[in-house]
Length: 143
Image 1 (cartoon, rainbow, N blue to C red):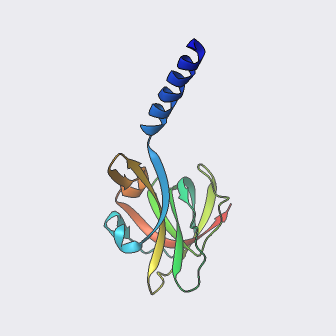
Image 2: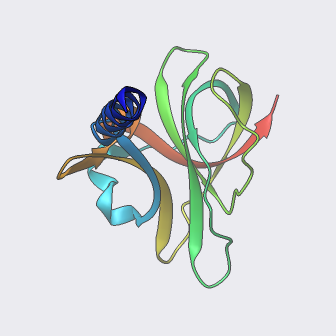
């Protein structure tokens, strides 16, 4: 009987612990929902950067335009956000060096991959995603 009570208490404590944890959710959202965090700039030459955060898109391009969302630091130590159109590659990782080839902004509705954090009734964007950053459209390739 004592063991049963002990196991139930442990189980309840584990459930309580996990219920208070933050929940991370990947979500595709229209670009209009995050445009307030973007300062779109023009860059004409490819450049290298080290990835700080990478969120690959889970949708395939076709009827709608989807983009992965990458934040990195270039060789001038500037933090920049890169939206990579139709990039479903999930092999990019934090601290990886990549080459970014700038692309023009596509016309039409663009869906961007985001990470949302849910804490109780509050839902908000994760770290770099809610920072105002210079932003471009570009193609990522492994260096």
